[in-house]
Amino acid sequence: MQELNRLKICTNFILKNSDRAEYLSDRFSIDSRRINNNQIFISLESDIEKNITNINNAIAKGASGFITPFYITRQRIRTSIPFLIERDIKKIYIEIFKVDLKNKKHKPITIGITGTNGKTSTVLLLAQALMHQNKKVGVISSEGAGIYPNLSENEYTTPPIDICYKYLRFFIMRKCDYVIIECSSQGLHQGRLDGICFTYSIITNIDQDHIEYHKSLKNYIDSKLKILNQSKTSIINLDSKNLKGINHLQYNCKNLFYISQDKSKDKKIINIPSREKIRELKNFNSYSLLMIFAVMRLEKYKTPMIFKSINNLKSVEGRRQIFNTNEKGDFIIDYAHTVQAYRNIYKDFNMNRNICTLFGCGGDRDKLKRKKTSKIVDQFSSKIIITEDNSRKENFKKILHDILKGIKNLDKVKIIKSRKEAIKHMFKTSSHDQLNFILGKGNEDYILENNKKIKHNDVIFLKKIIRNYEYKTIKDC
Image (spheres, rainbow, N blue to C red):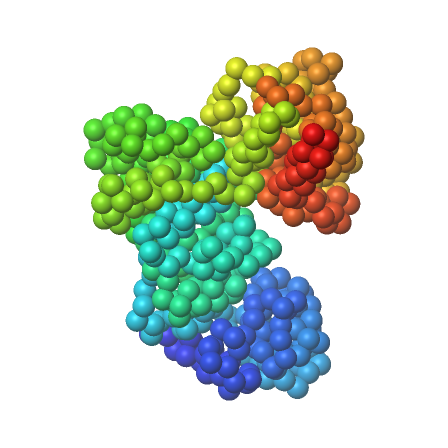
């Protein structure tokens, strides 16, 4: 009752002191950098000095009032605008976001997808599969947000909480049947998805990643598994070694199902029956297909209809995207940037062909991963091209030094810092029987270097090279 009273006080304060808007969440902001004129600023910073700094920034941008958990005098902020002190604002601000959703009759099935590898592909492929069943699907992912397939550019894998809730409101108003959200470890850890109850959560796998942020593998795993506390049903990849030993009983989600490549009679493991009815789809991660089948089975779709949806899937840009040429061999572009992702792609495309791999490693990130990744590349590749891949603030030569530690035969290595020049060289020197992997960037539109965004897209650039080559070949004929 006390919490309801505090919520009512905060809601009334926002309504009274902000510009009119149809929805409550349009009347306030929790980010002082994105405040609009005559919006209320809710300051959540736990440090009082930073709290005051953010409040002053919001006021400078036109805030008409603010809510803070600290006792603040007018002398500290030097303003006459109204403000409210609510010491427990961090406990109730989620409920303020949910006010816009509470009275809506339409309730979409909400699916949260997390994991180290394959989560973006699984989001987009599941959206495709459900669309084949004439369902309207809202998507929030690193590839964009909106009603699939019409996605607008999204700066984040998982956007800040206020943006997530505004998308949810939009999807509900548009009567989407499903909402699929890609849930990053940082997004879960930072509470960007707090308050959202997932009908299903999917954990594709957990491998070592983002250690520079989480500081340890345990912290990273804990952040991922946080999704189990806000899910009614969860589907977990039993083949992922870091998910096998988890004590699932400690989480709120008690309705657990699993997928696995191994056949099992356990009713909790959802297997695809008669896999020969699914055409060979090497450009899709097999675990993504298993997850799609599991969700659709739990949603009571008939098996023939599920097979039809899966067999009609189209590849996702920059995810195991295959380009075939007549004289220059085949090219595969993939977002792979973790050790396990590298292992998986070589395993799934294990052909008796000469393999050339173009790759790099990100700067200001897990340095131990560089040697592990290059060892795998060295094992499977007859030619290697090392190039730029989001060096950020770190010197490319330092990254290169760490990568080279994992390669035994340096004679097969070519170093070309410019990613464009590296792809050009790969294409120029490729032969008709060569299989070429371009790894790490996928469909990203830029390279991060020295705090700058350098425009580049592997998919677009390779398409242009192939198109120009084929045009020239035809012309020469």
